[in-house]
Image (cartoon, rainbow, N blue to C red; front, side, top):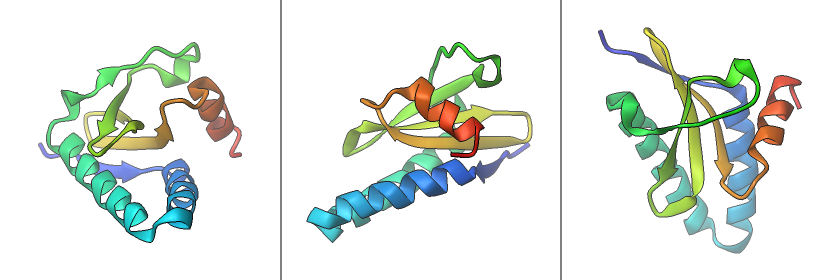
Length: 109
């Protein structure tokens, strides 16, 4: 059974912010980043076990994995695998306080 790709609203916000930031200095870098992100989404959908399991305090965040974006290795795609789907949850810079970022997502902020 092929899983479907589900992209959360948090990813849309993350990408909007990141593309705006990267595009300030060079629009071509922002374009390369977006292309690399879509490639990672496809790679994860094809092989959902590739990412490293992450440990978070909150029970709602168990079974989350992360995978680096090729060419932008400090950026991580966070996702969860279910029987039906690969849920892309966030795209974040690895230096961010990840627990805080996921807490913001939980409260819609």
